Length: 469
Image 1 (tube, rainbow, N blue to C red):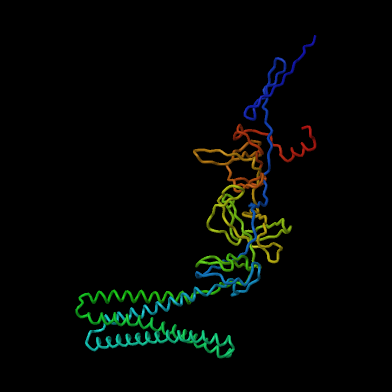
Image 2: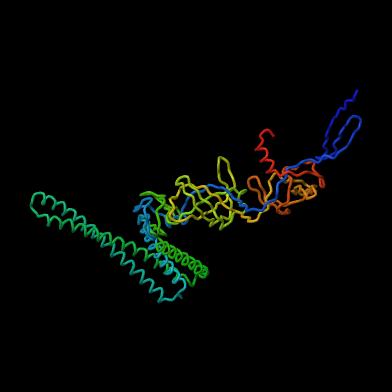
């Protein structure tokens, strides 16, 4: 009877490679089993790194116009959206504030004159002729005041009589005894007398102020020689003169700088008005915004974690769902400071970026756009799949490595530097074009290990041809 030979074949792989134990009856034979690994060829190709962002079309030269003084809006000759030229009036202001400044200036000048007179009196040497001269000035001022007061008394009498005459004329006119012209003459006479009284009263007020100044000067001159504090008085009066002069200077400057209207600083479009007719405004309040419709940009706020490599001069692909347009722009400004903005329901640190766009597009201020910013371009990047490399930490230093399949079929563990990552590939340093790297290395692979490489793309094609694999 022939012996039946039972054949049992078992294969054990240790660390990805090992010995196959083959049993043939009572005989045992050991054979080396070489594991198969998928590999990818290192390729050289162009790699572009991009950042996607949202943007809003805005005016490049949008300028805010501020009120230069406190006042009240009197008139708005233009409306939002109107075309404007440089110098066109945007907001007119009531002039009563300017008139008030002028009155304050008149009072300040009078105070300055009085302060100077007092100072001169303190500094003039005291002698009898000076005192007599000052006494004469006081006497003249008092006489002027007396004459003005008498004149006012007489004017009051004349006004009272004119009113009585007007009442009588009114009765005569109603009876047809006098003409309209004669009646008007009575009214005119009364008006003239009242105007004379107003003028006389103003003159009297000025004369009284002048008398006070003359008396102050007289007292200073009369007591100068006996007053041990004369020098201190002179120094103090000099300060008062300086303060009065500063007040005059400031009011003069305010009047010269006073704007009865806010005008457009550029030729463009009135974008927005911030005030209404009759509204009170304070100095420094924004009243309008003007922009140039022919010079639009796109403003975008990019999260700080996407800002690596974003710089002025980079090309930007611009798309707009509003107009179905697609065109290219360029980053013209990257703002120096980040700011916190609420985007997507959460606060993020973002950096504002300004992108130029071609002229004559259909985009208008306020439209939104999708931006693709090209931050890096490597014309000859060495490319491997991102699944091809692994990371490890040695002595707290992290590094990346791949397993290269050498020509003799052994593995070489090689450290690399990952430069950029895009989608499912990475550009690296430390490899050469055409080298084969393990597509999906595992922890049990070791340096010098023997493998059988299979091109991953060929295996994918084989699987596609045979779905049952």
